[in-house]
Amino acid sequence: MMRKLSLAGSVGLLILVGGTVVQANSQTPIPADPGRGDFMNYCAACHGVGGKGDGTVAEFLTISAADLTQMALRNGGIFPRQRAIEVIDGRAQVSVHGERDMPVWGDWFKFEADSDGAGTKTEKVVRERITALVDYLESIQQH
Image (cartoon, rainbow, N blue to C red; front, side, top):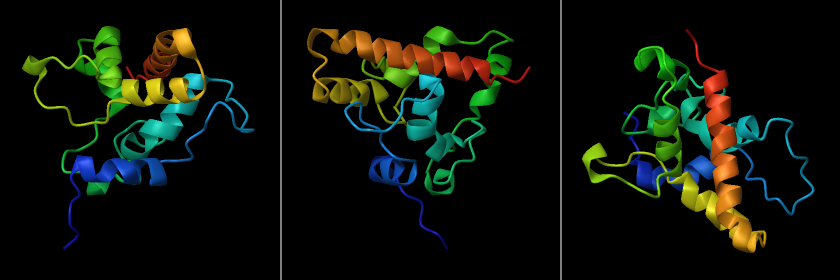
């Protein structure tokens, strides 16, 4: 029987298995669609390359990864943009929403921006990355 990993124990695995972490000061080319690039680097390990919840580490999670292609369908046909932003950012947890099951990417993006010397533009960089990621999620919705 395969042992299920808790999400907290799998975060390191996500970064290791989920793709290369691209740093802005590296020689790695910036993808044409930064939202898709961040999705592949940070989300695909759990949610799958196509966003269907079938990523390479999904079987090890204690809670199933969501099918992100059905977000609008599950919300009466309207893409829940603000909710997606809040879930991805994760830094302003609202207790009535229950426990947080996925990593707080707002903290990670802030760490990367701080490491790259963004200074006073750190929050702007974080917001732009989250917006691009949400734009990408909206583009993969299946109606």
